[in-house]
Length: 63
Image (cartoon, rainbow, N blue to C red; front, side, top):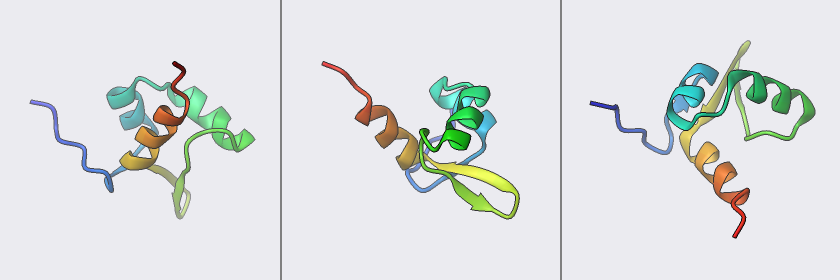
């Protein structure tokens, strides 16, 4: 059973890749360029809020 992702949960890049299919390499490069989903820095760690990933994906939807 897949764990429920609440909107405030902080995800690692590996978890973003697992749950949303966005590669860790893309996330790394996008963060350097300032083009990816918003990040949360905790010390040296980089995390992503679930709600931010969902909103970022939604903002890129083309109809």
